[in-house]
Each structure stands twice: as C-alpha cells, then as structure tokens.
Length: 428
Ligand code: AMP
Image (cartoon, rainbow, N blue to C red):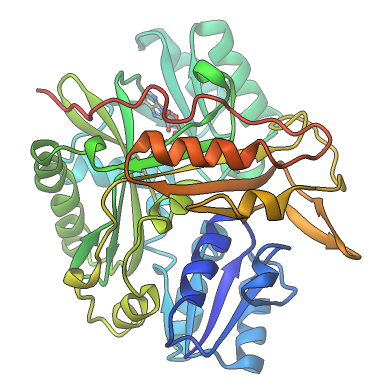
C-alpha cells in the first residue's frame, strides 16, 4: 500500500517509524515531515492545515490510505473532502472533530449524555458577561477558550484579578485569535491525569495502552504549560477496576452518544481523564492521537499498525489485532532554550547516532530540519527520546541515558518524567 501521513512532529515520526516496519507498506510519504521522518518516508512540502493543498497533493500521488496526525486538518474538514472523493483516510469528519474544535460543543455533549466531567458554570460570548459570571464561581476556576488555541486556551485562574486578565487578553485583545471568541468557565477538578485513547471505526473500538503526559515545562510540575515535555506508559497506570469504570462510564456512553446524535466518528479519539476522588471524569476530548503520548504508545505496539489502520478505514476494525508489549515505555522531550516562551532555532544537534544506539531507544524528531549535512533545531519541542523496557524504571533509565548523549545550544528537558508514577486511582 502507498500511504500518506499528514503532519511533521514527534507524533508523526512515531507513526512513520511504525508504519515503515510493515511489509504491507510499499511507499510512505509524509507531508510536511521533518529531518527524522525523512529517514523513514519521502517528505513533501505542504501546509498541514490546508485542506485544498492536501487534496491537490493526494490527487497527484494517489495514496491508498491517508493517516492524519494533527487536529487542524481534521477540524478544517479533510476527512469530509476525502470521503467526497471516496479516498481512504484515518480521521474523523469536521462535525465529529468539533469534540476537540469547540470546548463548548464538547461540554454540552458530555452533559447531554450524562458522562462525568467538571461542572460548567456557563459559556459566554462577551467579556462583559464572562466577567459578570465570576461573581458566582468557586476559586480557583478553570477558564477555556472555545476554539483551537495551540494549547494556550486553558487557564486555571487563582482569583478574580487573574481571571479578568485572561478574559481581557482572550476576548478583548483577541490574543489567541478566533478561538477566543467564546469562553467557558468550569469547576476545577483535583487528581491525577490519564490519557485514554481509543481507535474506532464508528461501531467497534479498541483501547490503546494508557499513558500519562507531563504538561508543565519544569520538574515537579512547575512553570508554564507546554505541548508536553514527556510521557510514559505502563499497565499499572490502569488497574482493571479503573479500566472497567472508564469504559462503562465514559468510553461506551461517548460512543453511544455520538451515534444517538447522528455523528459518525472514525479514527483516534483521545480522552483526557482526571482520576478524582469521586471517580474518573473527562477533562477534554481530542480528535487525534496525543503528542508525546503517541511516542510512548508506539514503543509498546506489537502489531502491524498498517493492517489495523487499513481495516479501520474499511470499517472493519478488529480489536483483537492490537497486541502490546508488556512492560513500559517512556518519552523524554528535549526542548529549545526558552520554550514554551521565545526561543531560537537553527542550532546544530549532535549525538543523535550515539543516542539511537542505546538498547531499546528510538530518537523521534519533532522540531528538526536538515541544513546541508547537519541536523538543526526548527521548533520548540525538538526531539522525543523514546525507550521501552521490562519495567518503567528500565524504560526511563534508557531514555535518560540516551538523552544525555544529545547536545544542542540551549537544550533542556525534564529530569522527572515518570518519577512520580502512581497506580491509577478512580475512587468514588
Ligand atoms: P484541556 O485542553 O481541556 O484538557 O485542558 C488542558 C489541561 O488543563 C488539562 O490537561 C488539565 O491539566 C487542565 N484542566 C482542564 N480542565 C480542568 C479542570 N476542570 N480541572 C482541573 N484541571 C483542568
């Protein structure tokens, strides 16, 4: 099969690496890809949010299957454009992608189908109304811009002053763009987070191994939020009692709710869960795989991803095909100096080969590009050093051993990925 993968980050490098291992893949393109993906696939220049440009590209190269990594092309309707032409694609339609594209739509969906989630105080389309609503909330309050805001749309406001500043910057100054035209306020949940991702063809579904992301930039979960500084996966994250609760109270009602609302959902569905003292509750939906969760998930895959995705696109998902390596995996993200704030690019990266030669390690590229015969940085998150092992300790040990071998000016990474790993709880 000839496969086109859309995207150019660490998640897409993980997918490209795995797809390339399949004997069924005769040709792999990635648009736009990055310097690491270039070793697994032919990279083609395209703006991955531009549906018309991707359609034009697919018209030319005629892939048998297209796999979409990031949310933007999905929210912009790429799956609909492909369906119209009867081209096979993995990813939900524009309507289904609203579960991620609109936090208000997603919250109303959760409420309508009685799926446990944080209580919403309200949704507001003007700064004046949002500020007035602050009189009736409990502090701290969670504030969410409705639309896509590149990971900057959620704010945990400690007090009224901070909340008003957020409302001013998002709704009055429109600093996050159109995604901030409406905001919602909701109660703050406490607990550990868990990423529960499923693959569904609209009828059947299969759960991927559980993962935990590390959003804050500094050790000990300090500092600002990022796109994700690392992730790990181990079966201990999800004891069977908790899995059953998540499936019965969240996954199955979500799939039934989508069907009842007449929304066909095909592709990866990411469910961000908070394990609270009153049971697991949904924090968010994403209409695609997480990054860097994907890197940790792919490291544990013991099946032919190409076969599973081809079956999914043909509406014949076979959950029994998804086999997983026991043990654990970890991904440590190496970021540019200054990230998630301002950072410079173009720094030469050395030590990649030495890092890749550590047993059980694969260095996955996110923000890298080729510059002559050098590989240089080109983004905030640069690399995801990913390892598997018999235990979480083994996987982490390997990932950190490899990370130490990589150098570029300003590089920084968290030293405590997976260090506070705890068994998932979801009491109630
Ligand atoms: P979201 O994009 O909605 O998942 O929000 C991003 C992050 O904000 C989540 O991963 C949580 O860490 C945090 N968050 C979102 N909603 C809540 C909530 N209701 N209570 C506490 N933390 C939250």
